[in-house]
Length: 316
Ligand code: UDP
Image 1: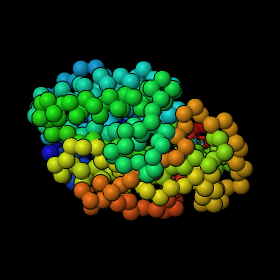
Image 2: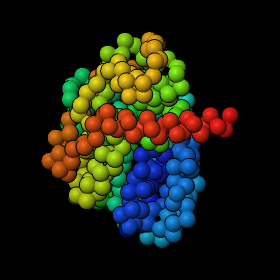
Image 3: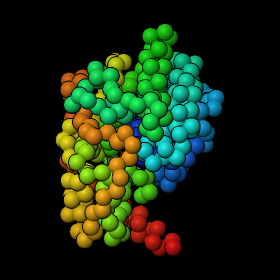
Image 4: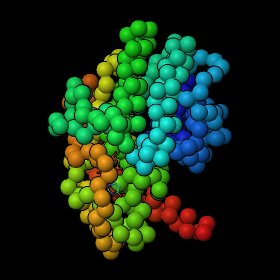
């Protein structure tokens, strides 16, 4: 198959690119590199089945030749990034989603939207199943991401219903692994970078808020399985084992052997207090469940971060 991945130079996109190329497909990555990184896809540059196009998908997309899939992953995804890039975030999830849907329609191909657990906002129902509508502050700082992803879902459903486009929607819960940017600003990235460089681990609020962290290879397996079934409703992909942020900090300290202290900083506005996926739908539909526990996933991630930090240190 020939597959377009928008945001394919990013953390998740580049892992999906690796997997689809390994499975024998042709992959075109389209990315404007505002949060993506060419180093993530460097190893494929010489592969004749791989192509990179530097383009912002919020602008019209022109592609020559047939396509089998459009997978729309492009968007800033770290709260730090979308707070810094609020308008680009809203544009890529609205105009970018419209352009990619239009492209899929023009090519009569299938379409997969990467949505997010942020559509549930600061949820009042636990765990979050796909039937929960969420609790989102539209004008809070996270609204730019949450609401534009909600719009993206609505538009994808409209293209499915009105134009018969063959669509999929994945709601991605917290994901981590190698290729998370060292300065990404999300919690796993921050704690590992801080621990490896002997700095204090920054806990926002009291650290009692929870998240459940899925390793990137589990998410990629979920994508592949969802592409293989005929199903148009949203599907949660996440790890249903819940940790407090404080527990995560302790685990990172233990695995890195860091002597760093933890420091408490103000909790960001509208930071979800609890996030926990109900993955019954993915279990049933895709026979999917996460295989990598937090400890083993963190070990792999820590080892990748330490190589990155060594490289950075050599460059200084
Ligand atoms: N967090 C933290 N310290 C950090 C970065 C994040 O305590 O250095 C907290 C943040 O307030 C949130 C959780 O960790 O409660 C997860 O944050 P992240 O930015 O990874 O993504 P989110 O799940 O909020 O989208």
